[in-house]
Amino acid sequence: MAGHHVRRTSDRGNQNLRAIWQGIDELADLPEGGSRLVGARQDRVERHTREWWLLMTVEHRSSLPSRPGLNRRRLLQRTAAIGAVLPFVTRIAHSPARAQSKTINVASFGGVVQEYQTRLFARPFEANTGIKVNIGPNASLALAKLQNSSGAPAQWDIISLSGAEYSEAVTQNLIAPYDYNIIDPTHIPPEYRESHGVKFTLFLFVMAWDKRQIPDDKAPQSPAQFWDSSRYKGKRSLYSGISGGGTLEMALLADGVPLNQLYPLDVDRALRSLERLGRRNIIWHSTNAEPIQQLSSGAVPLANCFNGRVVSANRSGAQLGYTPAYSGVMGNPYCVMQTSANKKEAFEYINYMLNTTKAAAEYMELTNYAVPNTEALKLVSPDIVDVLPTSPKLKDKVYIKDDGWWAANLAAATAKFREWQLAG
Image (cartoon, rainbow, N blue to C red; front, side):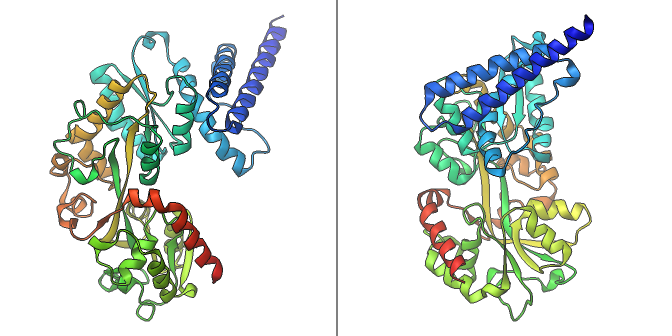
């Protein structure tokens, strides 16, 4: 009898899993604006998830099994749909003793940075306030849109967005204005403060090189030198994600445009500058890992990339160099969902991240990414401070990416860039 009971339980669990995947598929395929349908689908997925959780033994609860036949497009479609119900699964996994405490859910980008944020900010905040913080990956504008379309309170209370995504989210009223009565802006430089968000993790888009081919004392110190193919032989690996990086800005700087006069971008002039560099001297990369791999393998002597990637590679034995001069300062604002039922608690957590000085300083030491807190900078070792985007020494040597310009001109700029690429 016991064996029959186990089989029946397993069968019912599998039925619930199939229903969960079907619901996620339906969520992923729903058009925007179908708020009633989204809410109904989420309710059904949550109901089946609850029953599946109760039926399955602990060893079977660790994760939903993978689905065969998932192509990349379907996987991307499901990411936002799974994000909508993932906090519910997290909630039912907690013990009843915690059921009465407040919980806020934060959508970020995963990886080691998420681990640092959990250790340095989320757990101490919970200990101080009793408010639990769950941090998960898959942050995106698509997830923000889904959260606001269901007609129910958002499952994710805080979401990290790219600069261009932030501007669109403000326009579409997806995120709430910052409550600066809760968030203390005293030590946040005004250039990183927006009406609906503060760029918490700040990084640099830099010129980098392979030290085995180009020693530091002979490396390019400006985009014009980086562009000089007679001085530096070999190909340059350039980022094709023009809105997420700074390739067009770099092309304009190489052509003599001053740092403080980059915007509005002259896209045609940037493309002429790339043409002058020469198509034969360019390898295009589309992921953050590619330029590091290409530099480390010796495939290219020069690349543009994000500074944290260089630091991480060198900790693993690579021999790469970079300069912060002429870099683009970029960051991801942490935003509170307009439909969050926990706005006050969400703003309190963001305030804790921004204004807990010692934790912010340790975060910068670990990641080489900056927190916009001028007091925390005083606790960071000088060699790290000098290459952070917020360093006073870099104030006139870098530009801050204009996310508003990119949000307004993304489609037109991308079309021109793709047309130029295809013409070669």
